[in-house]
Length: 96
Image (cartoon, rainbow, N blue to C red; front, side, top):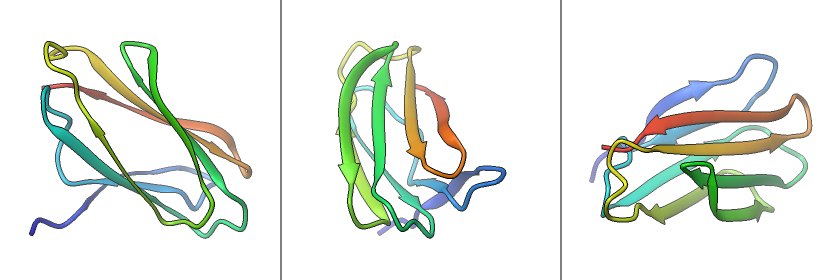
């Protein structure tokens, strides 16, 4: 089984974003968000600026997955994380 790779850590925050691979159209995209949080984290997922998923993680680390729709190659997937320490933080991927 492959291991997660840290994609990004955010300045002034303990939040880190981890994935197996970049998002690929028609495939399952898995990621996790880690950090020493005392409060729930809220994440919102956008594909081409349209919300496709939003949830609250009560007990970090948060393990999430989303199916990348067909015919989405070349578009963007954005993960927005609401962090009580620094506000909104986000990471944008290009869908392969």
